[in-house]
Length: 74
Image (cartoon, rainbow, N blue to C red; front, top):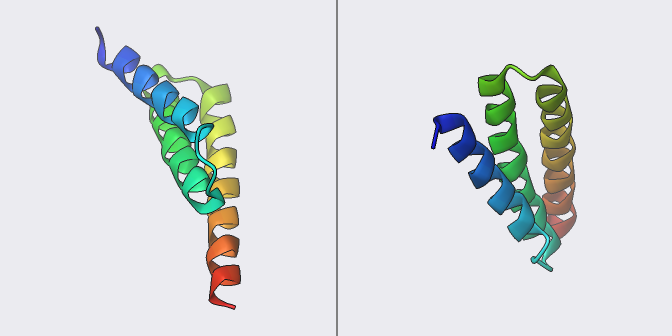
């Protein structure tokens, strides 16, 4: 199996596992890690659509995680 496929499968398993999580902070964190893995996949595959999508998802998840942490401190 090539490195590209390994990264894709790891990213897939991480994103799928995020759907099994009920705690919102943990869910978003796991999904952020999955999106980051998909971003690496997109870079390795030189796929601009995958790169763009996962940059957006990483940004959204990072913002949402930051907001959850801020709200927990209040």
